[in-house]
Length: 99
Image (cartoon, rainbow, N blue to C red):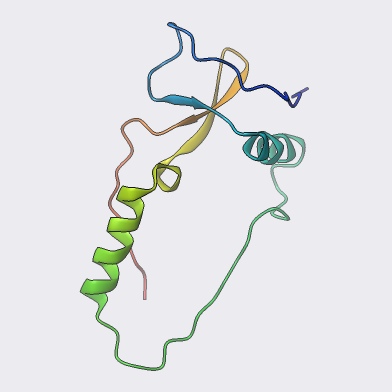
């Protein structure tokens, strides 16, 4: 059973360099997901209606830049030797927008 830590596990020489320890908030979300992966109570959903002309190319570039600047947007959560980590190695930073 997963256990939340009040200390962040130190990086060790055997930990892959693309792995980062989780913050307490991330550990809490990881714990909730482990307990009930089918639940989405901890997700936020938003919808926006745009009622003016939209430059799709500019929107795509803006999202691409946002993802490039914020590593958390291109990260996944994984476990390594039984501990949860955030992994951002090798993930494509391209963004697809569906209209």
